[in-house]
Length: 254
Image (cartoon, rainbow, N blue to C red; front, top):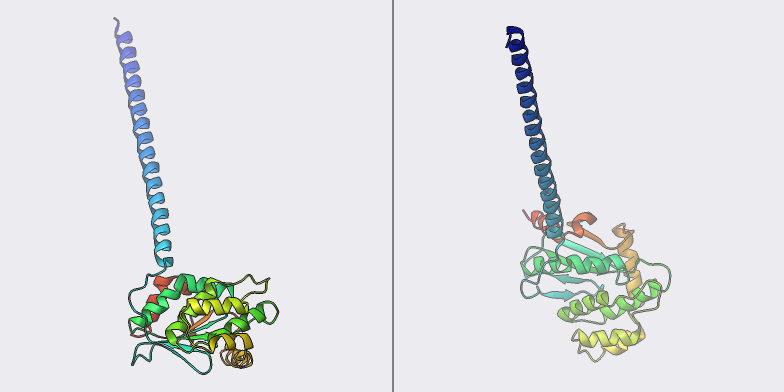
């Protein structure tokens, strides 16, 4: 082989070696990108999963942790739930038995209010009002609230309160009928001989409407539910997230 041919062969060999090295580098780069994409995908899925878990955890309703705190029914139709000596923080719940959002609040966060009162961490005050001005919602609301005022025993009152929300009628139909209210009273354990007549006569309707107007004006209420912590309204996002709700209320006691 001549010197020229040997030089040409060496040059070709060098070029082939460079091409091989470049091909190997491209292969390594492709593998690296693939691993990066897969890792990023796993991280993204994990982040989504963690976000879902967090959202689920803060919106999960609490379970009953023990006996209820004592409940006292007031002459104005409100009911106070608190352990002896607990005066703060004060949680005021303004609710309408016909209000769908109030029903949802009871379903999601009702047990949190009960637990905090039972733990001695809050004084909870229920304010049944009528926010609606048109029938059948207004009449439904008034009948339900009148019936609640017919219950003097605190524990029975709260059981009746919960049954009213559980059996809330549609906003477009007549509901909370007298016979239904009497039956739910029995289910709540109401034993007063005056209960049926009180429900039938609707005798508390005027007092209830007067209280609704008074408290709505004083508290500047334009929607239900409205829940105030020491006089300041709790944001809806917190209100419907039991874990956040608990943190906000317990934090107010510090």
